[in-house]
Length: 283
Image (cartoon, rainbow, N blue to C red; front, side, top):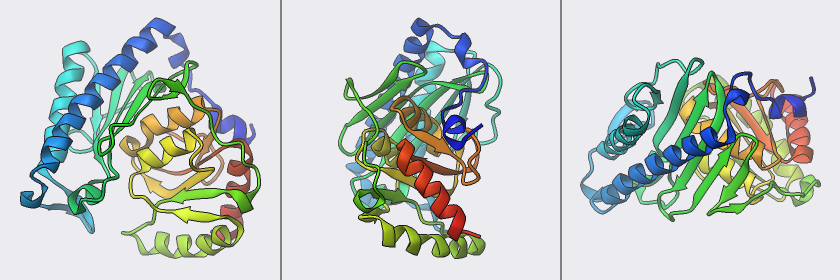
C-alpha cells in the first residue's frame, strides 16, 4: 500500500453505516460542538478571572475546557445514550474501536484561549467500530464551521471544500505544531524544520491542530505536520482532510489512527514531498 492509499484508507466497519446514519451522526457532532462553543464564548467574557491549571509541563486546562466538555457530553447522551465518549478532560482512556464512539476536544488551543489569541476550536467526531464516519470542527473565536461525513465530502459553512492544488513546494504554505515537552522530539523537530523552511513559501504555527487540519482541507495550507498529537486533537480533522481529497499518514507513511500519533497531512503532491523531506532530515 502506498502512503497515499494509506492516508485515504478507511478501517472496516464504518462502511456498514448508511448515508442517513452518517448524516444523523454529523448532526449530533455539529450540535454538540455548537453547545461546547457556547460555553467557550461565555468563558471568554470572563477570561481574565480564569484559573490556569497545569496538567503537565506547559499544558494547561481551565474550567472552560470542563464546562464545554460537559455540555458536549450532555448533547451526545441525549441523542445516543449508549455511545462511548473519548474526551480530553473527562475520559481520555476510553476505547475507540468498538461500537459508537464520539471523540471530543472541548477546547483545542487552550493556551491561545487563555492568552486571548483568537484561534481555538471545539472538535467532535463520531466513529463506528473504529472508523471515522462524521466530524465537525468549529472555530470558537470566529464561528466558522467545518464538517464532513465518510464518503459524503467535506464542507465549510455548508459549502463543499477541496484541498489545494499547489504542487510546488516553493509556493506552498505549510502548518506545523512545535513539540514542547520531550527533549528528544524537540531535537528531532529542529533537524526537520530548516529543510521545510528553505523549500517552501512559509511555515505557520497557529496552536490548534484541529484548525490546522481544517485549513489543509479547505486549501489554506498545502500541508501540515506534527510529531505527536492525541486522538481528540485530530479525529474530526483527519476526516475533513480525507474527504476533501487530501492524504493523512503518520511520519512513517502508515494510516493515521485515531490515537496518540505523529501526523503528516496535505494535498497529494505536497503530502508526498513533505513526508519524504521529513524522513530525510528527521533521523
